[in-house]
Image 1 (tube, chains in turn yellow, cyan):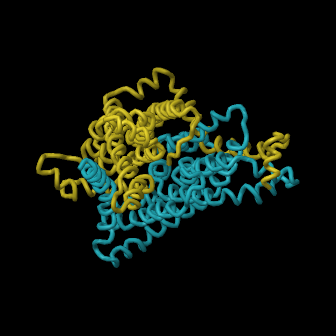
Image 2: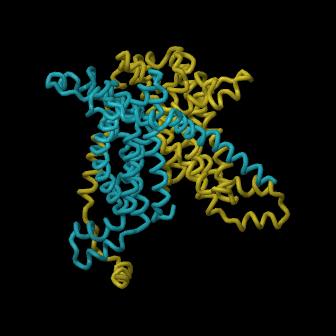
Image 3: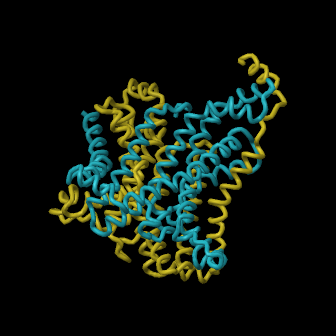
Length: 282
Length: 262
């Protein structure tokens, strides 16, 4: 076997693997049927509204407030995730932590927990008489049924994106560089700021973008904790659903195109950032 | 000192933000005793919703597994024009909002959808019925198996397959005897991820389901119904089943040592 492989490698044998037609055919057929054609239908439908119709459907105070909440809360959540994720990835990669495997599994939990479960659990935690809501109530803090609740839910679901993007980079980072800096007299803070952080910047950016992308479209974990008050705690995906429930297909479609365009832009940015290298995100 | 402070902060964040939600599900579900938990879980409507979720997963997961193997084979083993685009499109279903994933099927098959009138004339119901839920679930779990297989196949290279071919094996022989055994672990793990997501999907399914009790409420939707009706203990009991699926997936991931070493 080894010999055959060596010969193949050397001679660049003219054999080609079979199955391109079949595998590509199945891939394109199923992808088109389930995802591409339905998404194209959305775009065509939105095109049918005409420029003015589309503009009418996405203007108005309720839409504006929902977009502001969705983007604002996602931005705050992704930033919180970036800081917390950096801290957690650093501690898990570099320090000996008691119960290391336990904490490591815990990081992935938001990936594995269905959003509806996360939603009711976070709500129960942060209502005024919940475990955590009770702690902030005396200070006038309100999380559940207010905009901070949206941030809490979005922060929860975004955390693993940052940690899982940073971990492989931190693990493969050359410790020699840090040691060299230390031996040249750099303080730990200088090492962290000047040596470690610059090497993490692309991964931090990727993690942030992934967490943000996930947060903007999120629905299940938010709708329980936000209280769904129109103009106050209504995220854009929720507004799409409520328009659908009123059979306002045009209004829902127009809003959906904004969400879809955003996903496409973030995907393109991530692809550019990685220049074809695939990330191990889940 | 810095070490201790950082470690404490990291653990505190994980404990408050991730561990606490899990703990409260268990406390609320089991707080009234195992008997109450069992009563809620074995309730007629909860059982129906579990059965529906399992049926849908049983339909969707095999299809997406076949798709995953085909996509990974085509994308990892061949270079063709449009390959980069296809790679990008493969990720699209995971980055689109679940609400949009549900909406697109309403636009196609709903009462005012493109095929709405035709479907009504032929008495076929897709939206607010099981077929719609199947489509929406297939959409959101589409690339999950492919994404597990693709990095593995790429890192393995095609030397072994080419060797088998030069030794006279047919295409299918190469696949079943050489390629398949080497991707079995990753395939099983991808199927597991796909299954867990199919059972737990909420947003997309919620848009197409219509929430008809006993007919189109899957387990996650049933959790919502119970919660909205203030049956909190029952809602958390049903949620504990989904939590169990999630935790099992995470623990099996620990056992599954990734062949790519990622």
